Length: 447
Image (cartoon, rainbow, N blue to C red; front, side, top):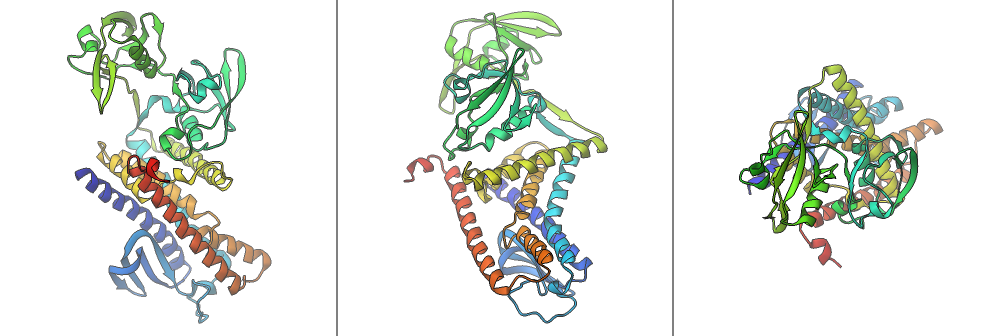
């Protein structure tokens, strides 16, 4: 119950800030050009609470799934008086700036939040920004069937050259039902590979399950008392390099070795302060969440904490937001081409779950990082050329500017009606997918 409340409250805070920033962008631009703003609302539907100041009614409404700024004369389907403070009475370039201002504020917020996180405490796995060298390949996985081997370095994936592991994870996450094209360097050779589609588009974890693991040092970060590793003398900071004389390049290779070895004693070779030392330990069977496996009792989760000066923090934030923006556009393009599934989209339930997890972690930076990602997604999504969204208004203003006249009201009415139905259906599908993901086994029980 406590985790549910945390999820709900954190989602309300995250979405509330996103909506407030977005609508404030429209509001500030409209006021700057002298457009009258009648309503500034967080949420849709019936007015719950609020106050009036000057010409504007500031309110919180019943449906907290968005917000809006109602400007005088904004709706092209309503009658206009021609007053100078009406939206349509202003030049198209000013209306264009007002439409762009909302998404622009979300994108600026994403850049600002990530800059702050980079300056204060950006904690992330060490391997994410490292070259994509493969440390282990799962048996009978799509990666093994494609001929991928431990030690291969991915030098190109889906058009991205010399990717980091973060690039690889992002590209593979949106691949969907299309083969994944990549090139790997093995010794002096560069080999072209094609990995068959992995997953059926309904299970987000299965979609990501290519079957490879990153190559990274296995540095002990946590010991479990009274377990074989601790009894054998292993310490935090030791780097495991081999088991029974077999070189290991990832924690997953250690885990798989132990499952095959069973309860037989193993010799562990490790580095401590540059010196090689050896331990002998006998794995024990443990059970966690109903899953039984052999373990030695240590964890290896190397993380790096960045605290960058402002200039570097801003530069990294701009680079990361640019990369994620292109990824979002690529995902939309693939959904339009039916190359990936809309089921990868997260709705309110998914956002609540992610917000709750981020809020439960120590410090503010996990939640701020999540807010940056959601804000960027909201900004880019609103720029899509879909009527009713800001991008649709921008597109029509550009078309009207090119043809030097207004699009007829009859055409606009049909466009808005069609777009409204599309967005309602889209929202229903996304929320339904959220429910399917949230209820274990529901997808398998549906016809």
